[in-house]
Image 1 (cartoon, rainbow over the protein chains, first blue to last red):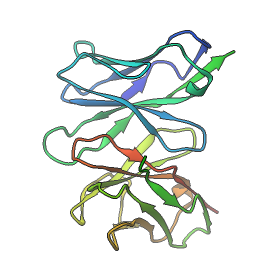
Image 2: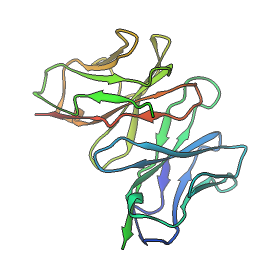
Image 3: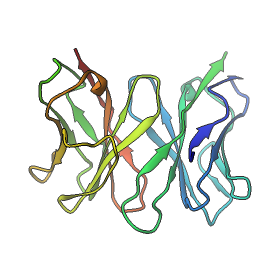
Image 4: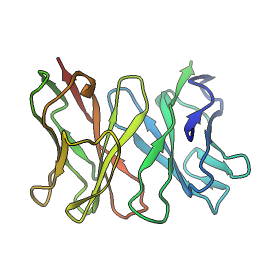
Length: 115
Length: 113
């Protein structure tokens, strides 16, 4: 069935290293993708988004890459800090044209920062 | 920075009781949403709301659920007769445009006993 999912449930990285979190999606019609960060006890927090007419977008210390050919999305976090510890979700918009969108979420990847 | 606020942070109720979860979206936003997250699982879409009516709803959002924007600031989710499986974190979100990023509140943890 269709799904948005993450390859790894947990990712452990050394403080200061770069982190790469991956996501696969299955609906080639999706045109909008978002990465959210969820810290314990809090709601999802928007990190960065990308539309399907782009393959790369950069923010502050974060980069999202979109490969439409293989339906793959990744989030790169540069110089990972302790405050980056959280669960990261990718989400896709499956109703890009017709109506208000509803996001379909991946399962989440827990990012653990090792000191 | 404007934020979405939700109350209460934790609600405990008995099975069969009605609950109302409250949200104050960001003031100039026009699109409102409810999502839920069962512990350890994915975030699931429930409903979207625009121009005082439901735009979309998921299979989860059955007749036991309803939403309302009773005034210019609040957006509520009502569950008429709660079931054990309704226990989850409920997140309210809003966006300024139809294609804009969602801004989430910190959620209400609903525990049905």
